[in-house]
Image 1 (cartoon, rainbow over the protein chains, first blue to last red):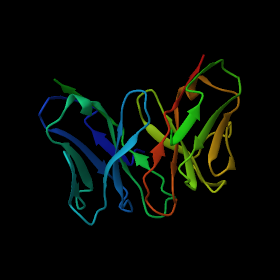
Image 2: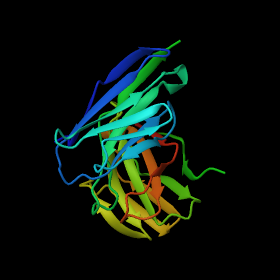
Image 3: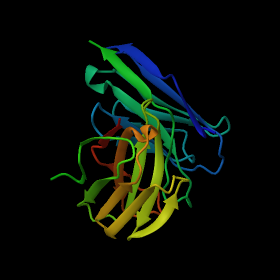
Length: 113
Length: 114
């Protein structure tokens, strides 16, 4: 049972465009939603994270939008650059889960020059 | 300096063998994790240790045995390797398991079982 569903599996965007990756979760106990970025041959690295008490969080070109009632959240990458080409994972965790991350299936983003 | 390091980077072995992967973190964190990333890139937690004590064991076969000699190290020993064990194994660490801290991942160990 996949508790965090991520779409699309792959995404191709032109340089300067907006990349949008969506995630949906089932467990209403989740209360922390990080996004991790993974480059080929490397480990995942935290990109940005949000808690459900806010509907949006922005850091530079990266924005998380959060819809608690729909149990959905998304990552928007504005002005996408070829250097953003990577695999992106949404994740979720609860406060009493030993910081155990449940990951979505990943989205492979390619930004074309 | 590398924050979370793993050795070896690549591991190719035959079915039935026993192998170990080592992980070390120099971040002073109390909690360490092992994740498995399969061929479809799906990431799943296997174990978590806090101050050398096991706190998460996600129904991993008992052929997998983590060992934490101190809080800076978490090694993974795998007995009787099977084809399905082929994957990338990531070690990670964070400061406190009771707060939702950032997890810092190592570069991964690519295991191929033939």
